[in-house]
Image (tube, rainbow, N blue to C red; front, side, top):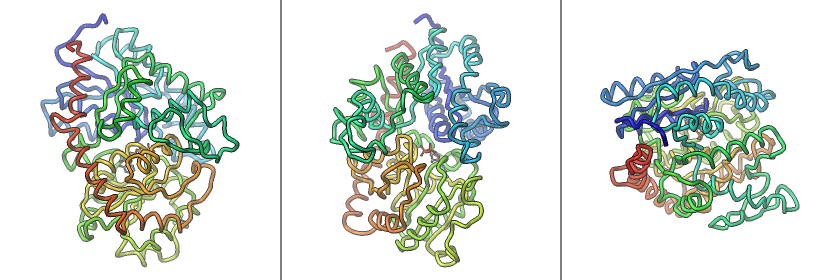
Amino acid sequence: MNREVSERVHILFFPFMAHGHMIPILDMAKLFASRGAKSTLLTTPISAKILEKPIEAFKAQNPDLEIGIKIFEFPCVELGLPEGCENGDFINSYQKSDSGDLFFKFIFSTKYMKHQLESFVETTKPSALVADMFFPWATESAEKFGVPRLVFHGTSFFALCCSYNMRIHKPHKKVATRSTPFEIPCLPGNIVITADQANVADEATPMGKYMKEVRESETNSFGVLVNSFYELEPAYADFYRSFVAKRAWHIGPLSLSNREFVEKAGRGKKANIDEQDCLKWLDSKTLGSVVYLSFGSGTNLTNEQLLEIAYGLEGSGQNFIWVVRTNGNQGEDEEWLPERFEERTTKKGLIIRGWAPQVVILDHKAIGGFVTHCGWNSAVEGIAAGLPMVTWPMGAEQFYNEKLLTKVLKIGVSVGATEKVKKGKLISREQVEKAVREVIVGEEAEERRLWAKKLGEMAKAAVEEGGSSYNDVKKFMDEINGSK
Ligand code: UDP
């Protein structure tokens, strides 16, 4: 590789502009900075505003470490996108009927940044470029200047292996209906799923073609960084390295690179609750007695579904913190709350409308379970916090992550979702009530809790000096520094 090796490893981090991608990549940039690299995040103006505050806080605490942002232009209107549509958050708050098409258009438009990326890579000559999977064109851009491109998918080894085997063997094409269960071939663990749950893009569609480019760019890239730790999913980490990617490094859980309270509280958006008030509320509850419900940064639930959750929670009799995202599509007219719900549940429940300081909450000893949509960041944050989970996948690769939590790790109780949320099938109040009780109450819950706690300890050990993720960070840095 004809590249000058500078003294300090300099890594560029280029996240897709949505919270579920920016949050772990910022964590990663901080992690590598704390291990001696210079980290530069590349992003668009609105996303830079979201990243600036946590970066400043990190720099204030670690004045010797190097981390910064380079802003790329992204002229939405010229690109045929609505003003300000340079972040996934915008798309989520946009009219529901438009959001699917707009999301794809937004993804395809990101190629506009290729030229800016190339001139930055040419002038800075970084040691490596870690670019989001949604930027397949970045492999070629890095290669032009002899810079290794790393892919970040933001999901588990398990989900990556499921996707691979689905693509290669196409078992969903051999079943009678979309709801007929089948086993994912060649994958360890006898994992059974349906076509309605699997995440396979149709290659005839524009998005399917784009995903093909994503896979090709992975094959041609230098390797893959994974937000996981080896002990969590060894069979799948081994499978992935043997059959899917040339090189992969496990460097997670990335959320654990946030050591200080301000870092944990400052991830993503500004919280819609005072963190201290939230902690005070949790302090008033007994150990492991509160269930935390949150469905990530992008899910839109109908008022009807929110109403079922409310009744289910009340019926379960458990303490809860429930995060309801308020945006153009849900949660603003309050029709989703049964009459006098908050009055009746005032002692037991707390509703956060908007954004919650998730890892601060998950780490509190009063939390006993996490109802999650199985977005990988949330799932691995729950694992790192040592929590059992109620799994409620809604789309993307979340059904795969559910199988990992329920069937492989056995720390999850499924709420019983059979298909993606956009199809509109409701999860009933009875299903919510049952799953919430099952994760908090009884002997099996206790066993699950002990095992989840053990996994949480293993997660923390993995990122400490000498742990598997700690060591893989070092291996990766040595490799890109050419000193292997
Ligand atoms: N998150 C948060 N507060 C919220 C909602 C989400 O801090 O109210 C964070 C969460 O901790 C996670 C990320 O946003 O790091 C969501 O990523 P995930 O992969 O779980 O789901 P996505 O939003 O991509 O569907």
